Image 1 (spheres, rainbow, N blue to C red):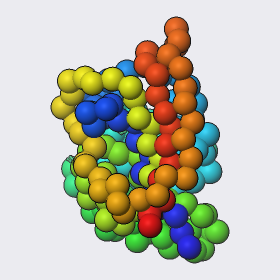
Image 2: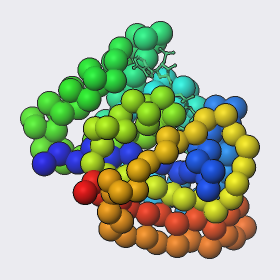
Image 3: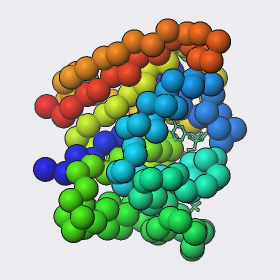
Length: 167
Ligand SMILES: NC(=O)c1ccc[n+]([C@@H]2O[C@H](COP(=O)([O-])OP(=O)(O)OC[C@H]3O[C@@H](n4cnc5c(N)ncnc54)[C@H](OP(=O)(O)O)[C@@H]3O)[C@@H](O)[C@H]2O)c1
């Protein structure tokens, strides 16, 4: 089975972004993100791509956009369905085992029904923002791991990396 996951960092009140950026500095979470996504197919919305500013190395970068046609180092698709179906084909042809949807709010909302794994960084803060992760129905999911990280000089808040798999 191909795993299709969301990897997302969200506050206690489900904020994931502000002013097209992340609302926090969490060095250990960035390291976790890099480790988790390396050698996988990652799918992102155009705004998230622009926020990152470049294709991420050692990953197959898929960007969904109706306004941008070509990006050097990434594959561009005009719909989320197209991106998912091409990612699926690439998994079958090349034995990739996971497609990771990395945001932002649009992409997470559009794919909530197709993902079978959630890798959530729950950041222990309530903050203002302008992009939110959708509410999930916890009855649909089973927690399979949870690792706690403490706030320190390079990590603005405590956070927990929680993995949920679809029931
Ligand atoms: N905390 C986290 O883990 C995390 C992760 C990722 C992003 N973020 C944050 O989230 C924010 C960005 O999220 P966002 O919701 O504003 O934008 P987004 O989902 O990254 O990108 C939205 C754009 O993607 C394209 N798109 C989305 N659905 C589409 C569809 N069905 N067909 C064609 N194109 C589609 C459109 O691009 P066009 O307008 O070009 O057509 C749309 O404007 C930033 O603040 C970022 O820092 C946070």
